[in-house]
Length: 205
Image (cartoon, rainbow, N blue to C red):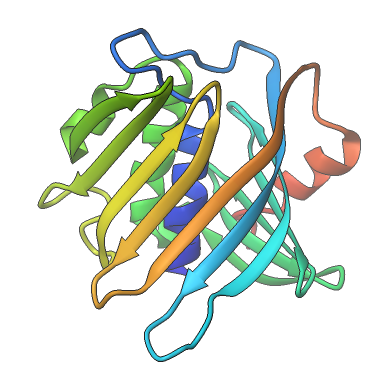
């Protein structure tokens, strides 16, 4: 679960794409970010990557809905109250934030970033920023004692333009998660009734 949590948290944290040398553009009040993703897991001992794909919905102050469609249908929900997963219409995992303190730190960082306060990144990570051909790049390494200190992650690399295009999470031992995002768009308006109902599940006993 920890690997899934950090991937979702960083998708949410970096979703609106900071421009190097400029003030980061964040989702405005009432805006929702929707898009698609492909995840490749490069694991030691495997000949090729393990691939999955699906869609996501990010709503500030509400949470993140991460729907894996292939090879299996699994919906992961993340809010300030906790993390939940559903498969075949049944909830298979539900962890309140009180039982996973690291989630609170990551979610606080998420909401601050969406509000335009990126100081949390420099506090919890060493951050290298660069720009190349109109694309921005971030290279993040967790500081000792930060919210990712208990996770086996050695480095996170993020790149994009108007939005985040790719996130690479390199783990201790050489495994790598690569997330590629497409078809991203901002929408003004509320979540659907079904989406609100899904997010309401996260963190409930």
